[in-house]
Length: 149
Image (cartoon, rainbow, N blue to C red; front, side, top):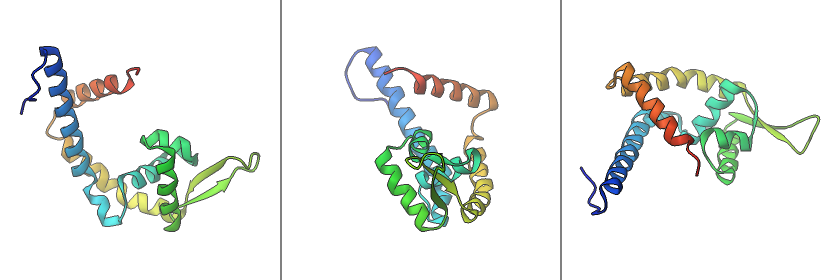
């Protein structure tokens, strides 16, 4: 569906692309992340667990940058993961002002259970695109995401 805005061709074209990108991102995200409900996890919680699993311990701010969430939101997400025993906060020995978030064994086991299903969902969702189309989407999204403000 085209946009209803009656502006210049350039404005209409950019708005149409934005609307399609936004709708596609919402649709793809919902489809791929639906299985997280089985584990009572939010997308942000899984993002933190997955980042810790692959990258090792990180500070809250680093995790927020990795999954594109604010520091205020991150504190609550980490609190909830900690309550479930999936992560633990640990002050650095050489600088107690810095607190790293660590994945617990329980958290690691959960990620190892979820990850194959998650990857299968990504593959299934992107199967509608050829490999070449997936590469083009990746390049274009990176270009949009890396532009300066």
